[in-house]
Length: 134
Image (cartoon, rainbow, N blue to C red; front, side, top):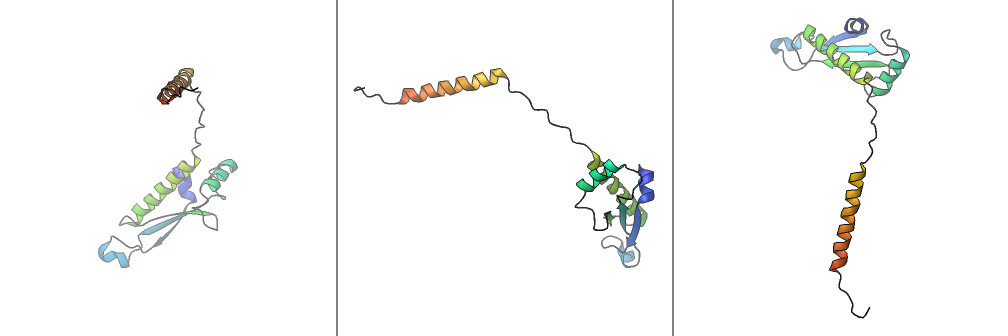
């Protein structure tokens, strides 16, 4: 998947802020990676739909998933960071959550709760004042 997705990602570079010293104003170290989900040949239609649904907030109007990095001092290192981020986002989106299996409450727990309620009720009844006229 790593090699296949690397072929489909379009990389753009720009000048970045941050680390770099004197090179910061003359070297384009920031890297942006763009990947078009609908035009991808890696995933089938069902997987593409899942990606589009789960990543809708990260996809721009043109249908591209955009990831950028400017943390490293070199363009190559930032390119690797973008690639790793992109793969992490995609694999996380494709994970199918395990359905929760509802558990049954054990009968002993239900019986104990009802017994405790009866006991508390008897304690409260015993606290009441009794009228001798009744």
